[in-house]
Amino acid sequence: MSGHHEHGRSGEHDEQAAAAMFEPAGWDERYGGQERFWSGEPNPQLVATAGELTPGAALDVGCGEGGDVVWLAGQGWRVTGADFSAEGLARAARHAEQADVADRVDWWRVDARTFDAGDRSYDLVTTHYLHAPDGGMVEVTRRLAAAVAPGGLLLVVGHAPSHEFTQLSESHRKAMFLAAELLPGLPDDFEPVVVEQRTRTLKRDSGPVEAEDSVLLARRAER
Image 1 (tube, rainbow, N blue to C red):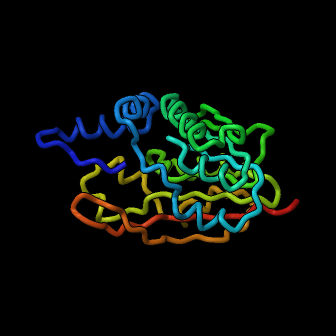
Image 2: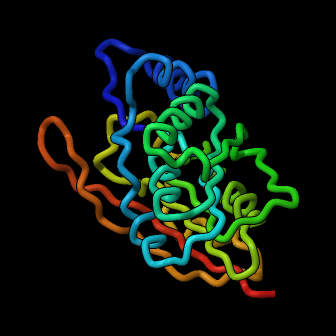
């Protein structure tokens, strides 16, 4: 989500470019160009959480190129990778094949903002760096929580607002959140386990940069 602005762009152009970040076509275009957009490494907050769990069924929403899906499948989970970008899902499927875990993975093209799990439920529902515009992550949290099985976990990780992101447009910054801001999205039968910001070191061309992840981990009651 962090790109540097080109010189000479107008503020209006910035906002248009930012708006495209929240739509499938913008992501299809990004994934269509570069060979690999993200590192392919699993997100550290997922490893910290799921590394100690007994594998079951997991759902990763906004899975992008599938780094987390592939890692979970490698740990023995049955994983559904969900994303609104067909191009991203196609890449993720290739990465799962390359990692020899394709038989434990399936894919679901869906937009987190309108996501409805229906009668599907999962022992772990996770999303990393999905940012809905204008505080929309509370609603996304509510939708994701509905997909968690009794006794299961919900893990939502995103960028905390930070001075490191000064180059981003206002709509990007407004899409960032603190973990506590998501609490209103948790149904009554969820107990928060972790509600905090955690420091993470980002590798940048100019050297390492400290950034903060907002981490919400919550457990659904056993009925």
